[in-house]
Amino acid sequence: MSSAQTILSQAHSLSHAEAPEDAEGKDDCMRSVTVDAFAKINLTLRVLGKRPDGFHDVRTVLQTIDLCDRIVYVSRRGPLRLRCFAEGVPDDHTNLVWRAAAALWRAAGRSGEPRDLEIVVTKRIPTRAGLGGGSCDAAATLMALSRLWNLDLSRQVLAQVAATLGSDVPFFLWGGAALGLGRGDEIYPLADLPRWWAMIVTPPFGILTPEAYDWSDTGTVGEGLVPDSRLTGTWLGRLPTLGNDLEASAARLHPEIAQTVAALRQQGALLAAMSGSGSAIFGLFASRRAADAARRQLRVAASWRAQIVRLLPRDDFVRRTRPVLAARRGSRIN
Image (cartoon, rainbow, N blue to C red; front, side, top):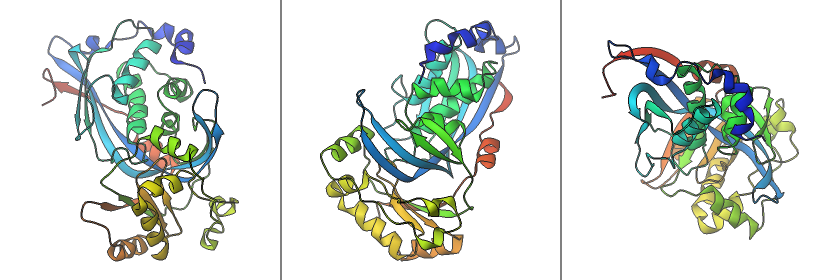
């Protein structure tokens, strides 16, 4: 994929577009954008081998769910300021939100560090869980700041910037169900699945993505599951195998993962697996009633979290992630 610098020629004409500080009038009125950033699950994840660049080639099916972070972007004078209401999440240049703002700033032909901007992230998506919490925040930032900074960049152009930030980030510009190839950043939209429900079970420990792939390099990947007969009638049921090749190695260090996957299957899940690099586990159910019944029966430790969400189809994803522009008065977010 091209780096952010390769699209400078496409964005250079926008480099003199209204800068964030120009949005503040003499009456101290500021422009703001609010965006919801939705999580994902990996319905299947097959690891095809290690690449020369150190990453792994994968074949994965990603699906957005209606669990989201909320992010507010406000034009305000001064250096970029990021605030994130979540324990252990950085509020500096190491945060993907900050990195996304910096990448878009450079892609628009602007020099130096991004400024005249305050970002407040309210986290609801568990971190280090394989749900794409950082990646979806980064993609939301690209879309929101394209609007706030009057860049008017297409999603295809934003996808080139997104690919420089992380393998999952381009997917979150489209949402719905999609096939991910290459590092997972080559996205091919798929037809929407039924509006099934999912139970997301999150343990108190997280797993870093590089760790998960390192473990899989030294272990045996999963053999794959034959799709449940109840999936017949959807393209998911026609896939040759389902499963997560990172699950077996993660479960060797954290046996609770395999135990929870097995418990969800016993409770009637259409499909159950670890999501992405973990540590969250999901189970798909055809109805909210079935999902609620499974949650009542599932025995997890008090430190674990179990919540019911719904699959988010592409049209709903696009509608609900559309940046909302507003005017604010004052010099900062309270």
